[in-house]
Amino acid sequence: MKAAALVLLGVMLVAVPALGQVPGHIEYTFSGAGNLMVSPVVYTGSVDSGEPLLVGGDWTISIDDTGWPADTDQNVRWSYIDATYFAPNFNPFVFSWTGIFNAVTTATVPQWETGRTDTGYLVGTAEVQLTIQDFDFDMVIDPDERGLMLLSGTIIVVKTGTGIWSGYCGLGSYSGTMQNPDPWNYADDLVDGSAALDIEDCSIPTEEITWGHIKATYK
Image (cartoon, rainbow, N blue to C red; front, side, top):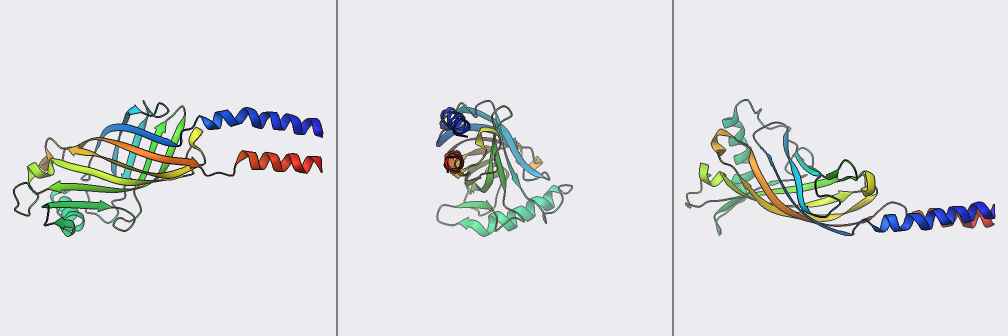
């Protein structure tokens, strides 16, 4: 029994450095594309630089468009998005609109994930904020104004990630820009941005389970 316990303790000590390789703070840059005008609403792309465990991987943000007009009539769909998300959030002091997509304003909270197939994926939920500037101060979103949006938001990382990220949770934020070369023909928004996350292992510590077993063995 004692020999088995010592072997188990050795396994635990070997495993600890591997867990220590997962950073507690992560920063990365990303790029990609997506479109509010196409159902389902999915923005996705690549992780371009920053955290080595993520570079070369991909990211996705999905916004639940349940209840929105179908994308077959895009004029009707855009009018709905404008009236529901942007128009109520017009800021007369800086002349801008901010569309807010979160658990309150959409049928379900937007979903987020970032990672690679070889190391696994961080997963969670997000709030998405898209800000359009009223350059000509006419309180109407014009085609050239919709062609450039500021992107920002927050991320809640949940512990259902995969691979090396399994059991990790935390908080983060991101910001960037969305440019659209032809917004009134509903081309995809081109996304560039950066993100920062603080994460920790939220699973039951391996040490607790192992030491509990060892103590029970010696009793």
